Image (cartoon, rainbow, N blue to C red; front, side):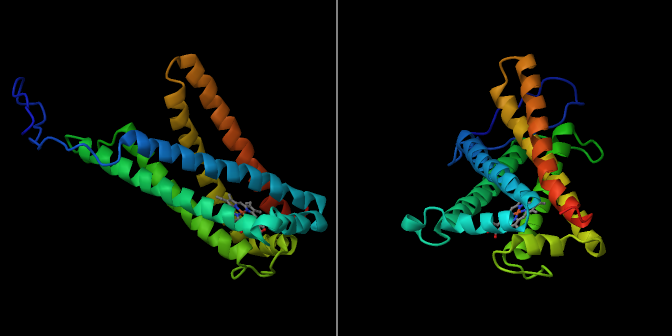
Length: 244
Ligand code: HEM
């Protein structure tokens, strides 16, 4: 049945094209939002553990290289050498794919649900945020690909030694290779924006009950994102300045 479109009012009102009644989507929006939140939570948890692990470089070469080796021995009797690392890699891959997939479906649905297209030069706030999140997400994805080639596989790293994060990090971030440090800094700033916005969206759902609660939760999300990103940033910056 075609939707009933009111013809009341002045001719100035935007004309809404009669659309066929929307079919109920196969995957409910609430499930997509749950997938976004769950995969986001897995990725944030990984980032917290990864950032704390990285800080061991300040305790020296033995500490950080020993940590990389220790990770491979976790649950070794059950999963074998590096089995735990592979479980984490699979969980991360599923989370990244799930996060992008759910975000894309939700964005497409929001676009379809909009009855009138935004006029050029009349961009609204929501669309600005959506664009920032989309482009931020692309930068984060490109960074992760580079980062794995750099510090895990080692093919774009001047040292590129397996299980030698100390050697790889100190060879990567040097004054001569300032552009690599800059690239990491820019990517981390993009991650800060992406993370803060993602947490703010989650908080908006949780904190609907009161404005004060929402404000407190949003501040907490900003502080959390900042501490996390600063924790990451100090490693490449310290290596570049020779403090490690
Ligand atoms: C800028 C500071 C960072 C430094 C110094 C750093 C360092 C490292 C090192 C040394 C490894 C190899 C670990 C190993 O083989 O045991 C690694 C792996 C990895 N890092 Fe980072 N990292 C940083 C930031 C990040 C960020 C911001 C992300 C995510 C957005 C990230 C995601 C990953 C992933 C996915 C791996 C691959 C883990 C694996 O499967 O082996 N890292 N990182």
